[in-house]
Structures are given as structure tokens and as C-alpha cells.
Length: 306
Image (cartoon, rainbow, N blue to C red; front, side):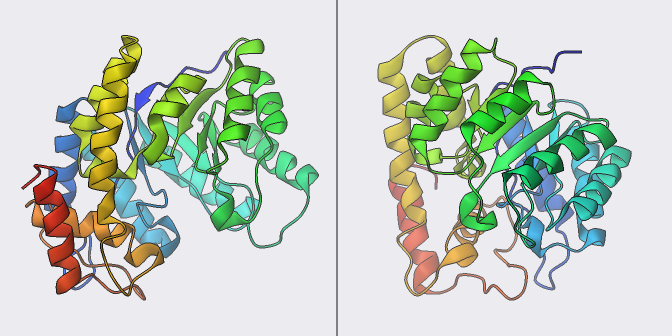
């Protein structure tokens, strides 16, 4: 059976916590409903923005369970089953299936680094032993392996992969993948996670985007997608330029880096907008405070979101 084509805006959901680092279900529900009401086409839970690698198995279960309950079949639920090696990824995949996920998202292995033969076998095993569509998550900055476009296209053509979530930052490789995907009859859903240049990805042939910034301004990404579907490229660029001004929440802070600067900025923005009760981070990452919070407030105000 051919894989379903997933298209549109599918934000990776940021997960709110209480001050004592428990899941803040009320804030989680506000954020999910707000994005669905904005018109997103799916939601991706337990990705990088969802702090998957900071989450215990118990926390992963709680997030998936609440996500499935809140979404209630309104949009597809993508779930990250990210872990170091194949057997652990399979465990997460089976559990996500049991809890009601629609699509599974996996990176290649990232501790016992092998070669491309092992990477290919990893995805083949996932396809053979799990019952849901599999998306490959290409994020070499975290897993230290770049997924080659030829391999992704091959696995798509053979039905092993249903799609790719590309966060590689390699626009050349992504362009080649889009072109090869067309030659093969478009077996893969190709989604860009490169939220600052989504307009370019759409021109290349992307089927949609997975923008973390879509938690803060889902409406902007939905408008951009609709404009791209209509072939209104002037509006696509205009919306991307506006979103890029908002993206300065990432670089207006001082003295923080990594998750503290990225996901920390998302949580702080959502707190300032009244969607999250707190900008708490999971250990060992510290929540933004003081001047850094005020800097993000200024960016939000300038973007008309306060």
C-alpha cells in the first residue's frame, strides 16, 4: 500500500512544565488547541523542541497520552521515537503505537556510530517491525550522521520510509532530494525543519514545514503555506520575512546557548503571551530570566504578538 502524503504545517510541539518540572497539562492543552485553531495540518510531539532526549520513558508516555487525548483525531499526531540505537527506538515505537500515534519519527542511530549500511538496516528494521508510517529525521548536528539524499530517496521508493523531516541545514541536499522524489513519483512526504528559509524549501518542492517557531506564531506559517499552495510567492516571502523578525527571540539573549537559548526562548515567549504558566526547563538546563526575558518581550512586542 502506498504511503499517505502528509502536507502543510506540522509544528514540533513545545512542552510546558510546572515550576517543579511536572507536565503542565492545562498549558499543554492551550498550546495544542491554539495551533489547531490556527489551521495547522498536524502536530509533532517528542521532537527536539519537545525535549525528547531529556524525557524519561514515563514522561514520554504521559506526553503522548495527553497529546492524543487533546488532539482527538483533529490532525495527525506525529511522535518522535528518538533514542541511541535500534532496539530502544523499537521499544519507543511500539509504545507510541499503543498510545495512539499516527506517524513515527526516528533519527538514525547516534551512539554506536556505524556506516551507511547500518543506517539503512536501522530504518528497514523499523519499517518491518512497526505498524505505522516512518519518517526519517535528518538532524546531523545532534546525531553526527547526515542522511544522504540518494539513500532517503531509495528507501522512499521501496516504501520503507513515508517521509523525511529535514533539519540538516543542507539546502543543496534537500533540493536534490525534492527533485529525485519527483522523478520517483513522489513517494516521500518532504518536510523542512529549517524554519528561517521555509519559503525556499517550498520553491524546491517541499510538502510542508515543521517550524518550532510555529508554536509562537502558527498563523504566520499557515498563511505562508496557503500562499505557497496558491502560487502567491510574494506573500510567501512577506510572511517569511515577518517570521524571521520574530525569530530574533533566539539571538536577543545573552549568556545562554543550546536548548536554553532555543527551546528556552520558545517557552519564555509562550509564557509572556499567557499560553504557558512557566518557562521552566528540564534539568540541567536553566530557564531564562531577568534581562533575557525582557529582551524576548521586546521582540514579541515589535512583532505584534503582545
